[in-house]
Image (cartoon, rainbow, N blue to C red; front, side):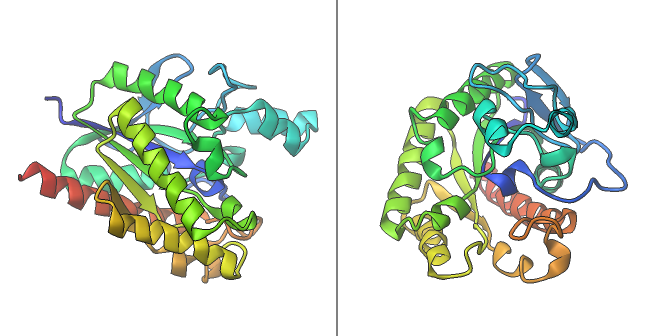
Length: 276
C-alpha cells in the first residue's frame, strides 16, 4: 500500500481551464504530481495543467502553453483546434482548478495523489460516453496512469454540463447519461467514486436547471456519486470569480475557491473511508 491515489479530472472548458492568468506564486503542489501521457511520465503538479493530445495520444503543437502560442501564430480556427485535439490543456497556459483541488486533498488526507487531466471545452456529455471520441482518449490516458502508479484508490471528478444546457438536454436524459458514464468507468477503470463539481449557470434560463438538478439528483439516488461542491451557484455571481474575457468561466480566484472546496470534500470522504 503506497498511500497514493489517482484523481481523474474530466469535463469541458471549466475543467479544461479557461481563466485569465497564472498565480503570481506558482509552486508545485507538495505531495502531488501530474501524469503526462506524452512521455509516460509523472511531473510536478503546477499550473498550467494538462496536455493537448490527438486521438492517438500524440502531443499537438507542444504541451501546455506552447500549443496556444503556436495556435495564435498559425491563425487556425477554433474548429481546427477542437477537431484536431481530442483533449486540451489549460487555455492559453493559464490556471485551472486541479492544483488547488489536489493541494486541498493532500492537506486533508495526508495522502499523495496523481492528477490525470482529461478535459476539452465545448463538449457535451455524449463526447465522454463509452465508445465516443473523448471516452477513448480518456481511457487510454487513465489506463496508462494506473499502470504506472498502481494507486490505492481511483477517483473521478466531473465538471461539465454547460454544452448540454445549450442543447436543451432534459433532466432524465442527462441523468441517464451520467449514470451510464459511471458504469463504464467502474467497469473499465475501477473507479471508487464519481465526484461532481456542480455545473454553474451558463444559459441563465430554465435549461441550466435541467442539468443542475440531474447532477444533484444522481448524487442523492446513487451511492457511487458524491457532490463535491455547489459553490458554482454563487461564485459566478461575483465578477472577481469570473474570467473577464469569457463569461460563464471561472477566473483564477474562482478556480482557487472552487478547487479548494471540492478537494476538501473528497478528502473528508476518503478520511471517513480509511477509518472503516
